[in-house]
Amino acid sequence: MTLPFYLNRNTPAEGEDLMEHLTAKYGPAAVARFDAPDNPLDCAAGKVGISFNKQRRIIRTGDSHRLVEWCKATQPQTVDPLMETLFKAYFEDARDLSRREELVACAAACGLDGEAAGKALHSDAFQREVDAKATGWSRQGVRGVPFFVVHPASGNGEPVAFSGAQPSEVIAEVLAEQAAA
Image (tube, rainbow, N blue to C red; front, side, top):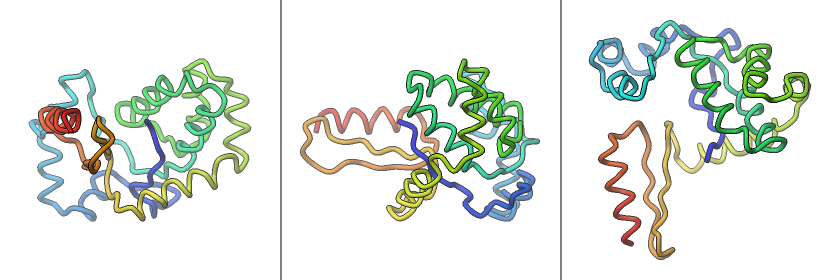
């Protein structure tokens, strides 16, 4: 399930250079690891055919979240293709998805009505819902994405929550534990 969350809530309107943002947030050593050709994120992505573009900018994502919520409300069967298109456009093609015309193009590429998507984006449609959901997750302690909550299959016991790009083995172990619980 895709839910809105503002990873960088205070991103300026013009966005930020990715490497400058990462340096300010995590320090130069983390950026050096991130920029290394054998970093774990790039290695994992490469295994599934994803090539992260490090020339992208950190951008505001509110309109992207609103577009997804609009899609859920109007054509829910198209949410997954839209998410994949947005992911590729931002992470691989470094398109500026804070620009509404880019979002409309992504919607149209998935077979959604671009004109209707544009109208939704130029209104305040889904703004309150997105802000409320994103703020709610922050209040619950979510600090990063992806974020997973796995409930026990029996319905008894506590869910397990974890954040970050975890190795598949870790995710498989949590799923197996919760399936047995």
